[in-house]
Figure: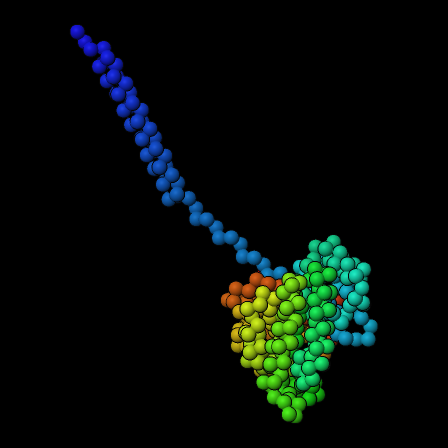
Amino acid sequence: MQDITRTTDESHSSRRGWLKATALAGVAALAGQSAQAEATAAPVAAPPTKRIPLAVSTYSYWHFQEQKYPIEKVIENAARLGFEGVEILHRQMENETIPYMNKLKRLAFDNGLALPMLSIHQSFVQPKAEDRKKDIEHTRRCIDLATQMGIPAIRMNTGSWRTVKRDANYYKTGQEPPIEGYTDKDAIKWCIDSLGECLVTAEKAGVVLAIENHWGLSSNIDYLLEIYKPLASSPAMGMNVDTGNFVGDPYPQFERLAPYATIVQAKTYYGGGHFYDLTLDYKKIANILRKANFKGYVSLEMEGKEDPETAVPKSLKVLRDVFS
């Protein structure tokens, strides 16, 4: 007589084996299809390179003439031309009232523009501690202005001895002897100490202090780096590299500063410069910045005598062609 229990168990075992084999075959088939798909799939495209954002300094429309060019109009021009931001020159502001600053901030916002930097003036190359203190307090006040306008960075200067006339020869050589009884090393220490005091306020406000190669002591790139590096550990310390403010061949010096750049000012001189003339190779400058992995703003400073209504659009095209 046949053992029914045994037959049933064998039947179940056989079915389980068949189901298991079928499942494994399906998995293998899917794996094979997946491998084939991976082998034949087109390579994944690299993400597009981010375009360097371009700003325009309000200074491009006003070169310290008697009548100020309204910052409001610069913002409107920038939006119409296709800039991404507007750099505000502190001395070009009509006043420092909250309603005026809020007006500028709202106008920029309504036009889809950032306000990446407030450019201010001060000098720490002053032997008297009380004179340096005045410019420290000026900088602190400007940090408050930047905070009110939502501006994340302030352009800083080292200052200069002011012992020579600012003529064409000065801009070619950058030569400026110290005041009698002092040395450049004294001035470097004053700059480090004064900036250090300003950084305490800037860190609390979340504003970057971007020191610039802005003639004077900073004409010497070694000096500029000697000031910058001891302060670089501060999250509020930055550097603004100006393409037009170099003595001699600009490109090797620009290459030295590019790795430290927080923001870059790009000079043009249509119609001849107000102070000096330069012909700059912006394709070479753009390549240097790419090599340094720079991703910040490039801010146009059109410093020529040509009408900015025509010179600024020309300058924008030059920059857009190399930074797009």
